Length: 123
Image (cartoon, rainbow, N blue to C red; front, side, top):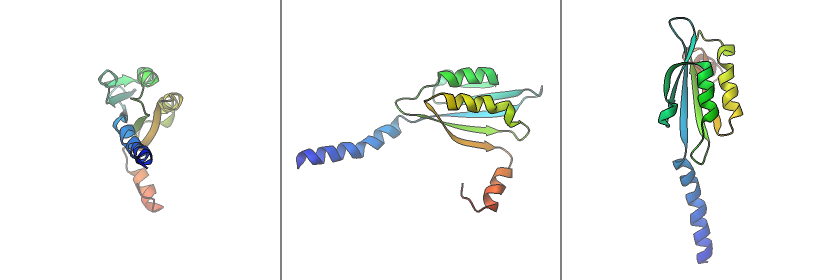
């Protein structure tokens, strides 16, 4: 009986230890004053934190990103005037890195929110 209680306690504690290792990255994709597309990276890892960098440099950061024993959740927010083709390589870099999982992809403009409300889909 004691053996079963120990196993049950270990199984219940496992999800808590996984959550402790969760880390995140946020990508802010925007158009600079010179009309080029830039990325600001916000991360739990200090060396990954960079502002107003080129897409190519952001891809290099994403290629090297690793989790702390579990996956890294990635949130992407874009300006409305940045075309999908401009930042598609970033999404591909997330998809190619086994550590990274795309958690959120959202435009700063409210069009996406209005579509969700129209179809009565909760955020």
